[in-house]
Length: 97
Image 1 (tube, one colour):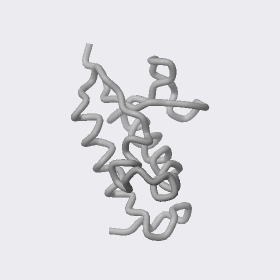
Image 2 (cartoon, rainbow, N blue to C red):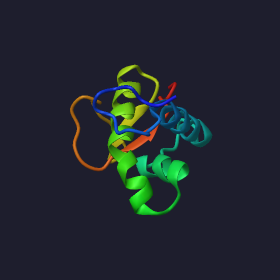
Image 3 (spheres, rainbow, N blue to C red):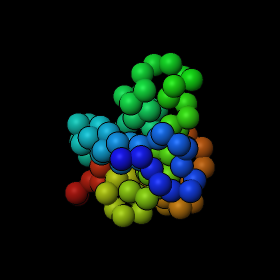
Image 4 (cartoon, rainbow, N blue to C red):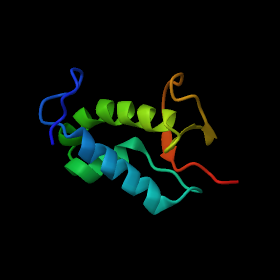
């Protein structure tokens, strides 16, 4: 299914991005994190020209999933407000402790 959101790029499957992101954080578990580029590379390979355009949609999906409590966005190893963070970030499952 192709994305229908007005801010999405044609041909980028947002459902596939979300599924891959959730699968990768689940594989790592709640005590480890992934880089958003891990999601992009898993979907498009190692060529930056192929995976680079996925980074903005990945961030938007990560923000939504974090707002829903399904993942956590980390900066310097600490959870951040998904609606108010800048810079380099990582993604993980919520911790249950």
